[in-house]
Image 1 (cartoon, rainbow over the protein chains, first blue to last red):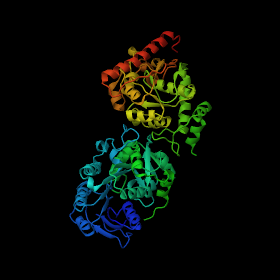
Image 2 (image 1 turned 30 degrees about the horizontal axis):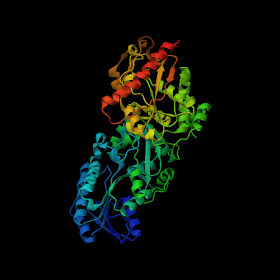
Image 3 (image 1 turned 180 degrees about the vertical axis):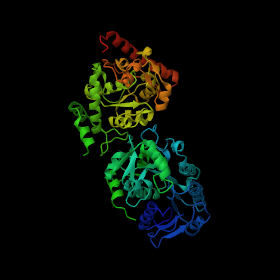
Image 4 (image 1 turned 45 degrees about the horizontal axis):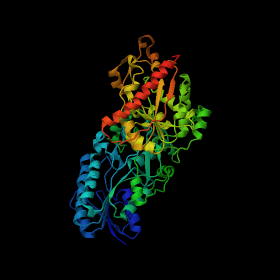
Length: 311
Length: 279
């Protein structure tokens, strides 16, 4: 059945390709972002440029009356000032949820992140959806992401008619993804923290798009971790990229990132803990509820991310 | 393959390799389990550990008491550095029939120690956390846990061979997962590195739970931290099974913990009485 689907964040690669995949299935897709319309968005796709916290976003709801909303537009980019991220992620997401309620949307998918669990020396393995959200202890910069997630989960129970599902994917990588971790995998030489080699998980963009399609087609509510195949130590993953690795003592790395992040889109300093301590999550619940099965092997995912960078 | 990888392979002991190869390992296609255990890398670390094991010339008894399937191995803890854990782990790999890989539960500061954290996780050590422990027991592993924790390991010379307070976690997990407990006594570790004082400010500086000061430190300097070649006597007791609710009141759990603790103390005392040579 053809539905009208509103997707936020389509100026980013993941949302854009999800939009494309759903349009290809015959759905009517309406795109939205706080950034300008991307050049490669199909000409026939309606696009609204609006900050999620502004009343202008209601136009999209009023004009198209979507039955499904995919809120994939969480701003993870630390270049965006903390206040603006708070406006977009916390106030904006609340606005999106209110409008979903007002316009009787029957399915709302919210893309959160596994970063909110935080990498911590005392993390047990694996982390499930019921485990504590630890990131706030060490990285106050993630407060907006944590609040977005909490808000979504509260609304999930408060408004069952919205059929909210919250996805917490691990590191999303792929040839078309431009997030911090994909950029890092493509960079050379690669610094990493000397003496630490925690286990990491990755999910290929196509697996995550499939996961989003799976939840779009269903009415099951819940909070779910989403991971790809396999768990490997970070150094092993970096070796697969065949670039030069530079071990750096933790203190030096911390200082460098703090300075570098002021000048260019470097790795966010708060992610340094992920280079020292594990944050291994389980997606057993997601597999059980939706029959999800990732198809991209971990080696293949990493290689594809590095090899074929396309717009 | 890099120089380091070749070196890693070169030190592999054939007996360690043979023992590893007889075992089924639940690892992913890259050879890792979710905790970071990697049997191929572990062969190297266990081979190095075996050299340390030989240095202490352990006398083992009762190792045939280790049953198949899930099991909690519970020894006393002593000796400032976890040589007791190392000796028990190597003994379980090379002398238990069939060989067992001990999944040791590590102290909370271990994951923060550079390099050591990696060697430990590749060898099968996991953070001592109830959820880690339960997951590993449900996968039918042998768990090596020291209920005394750092209290036991860092004890001073004048408290040697006296057990310190046992935690309750291992007993709750044994009840919850219906796991038998094998009590183990290790005698000899107290004489390897002796400590007469715990330098707390230094411990705080390194984020360690304690910082031992050996009596001969003024004489030998840092060399005083090298372990002396004491002989280890390791006794594996018969498996003990407990019944009851795992979420019982602390007092009820403590009664059961005391049974294990008393058993281990009795085994230590027997071992000490029978010991002819310390070095």
